[in-house]
Image 1 (cartoon, rainbow, N blue to C red):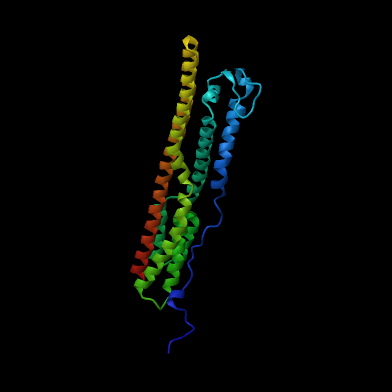
Image 2 (image 1 turned 180 degrees about the vertical axis):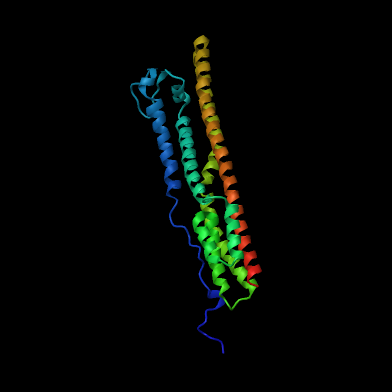
Length: 286
């Protein structure tokens, strides 16, 4: 008669991988804060009355200052799209820093290749605890996934109910669950970089078009050499929108590609670690 107190195969253990706690508050607050900061920079730094020879004393949301004293200050006259573009640049910089910290932490310490080689060595000697200790030293996503798999690996060694193929499948399932928890943390917030990479250039062009419309409108109203001078000045100011939009987009594209490349490297290490565990168990515990 079978021992009814013995745990069933399906209830062997719960997954060692646990969901990462913590919301994505930065994704909610950062864009709003950056747009507000962009307006503050445009209105009170670039648009400071002391930066113009003919300031608008009435002030308000969008003062009509004239005669910027410096090259950088001319960006103020690019129009209301400029603070949005400055905000977009701040959003990019914010999420670049946030992703740099997250991906650096996920990469862990040392080389993933060397880490996996050490784990393989310990598993070949059937020293699972030492392999788990290596995961604690690695401190990255590859180490986290490997550690979850090793805990299930250790559990399956003492399991007498399942055959080798079933044990390997259990280990593989544990690795897949741990991977499903790690990857979203790596890819989170990259959507901001990819979106701004596309939108910033369009915003810059939109601001330039608005500036060109305003400049040609003055030309039609005034006429003469003075109008031509204001037209060339207006075009120069409008092109600040294009420059700011293209610059923001370029930074976003470059950093997005940097992060996706590093994440691909981590993902490859996770896949290799999973393969290492399943192959090692199949070879050592037939």
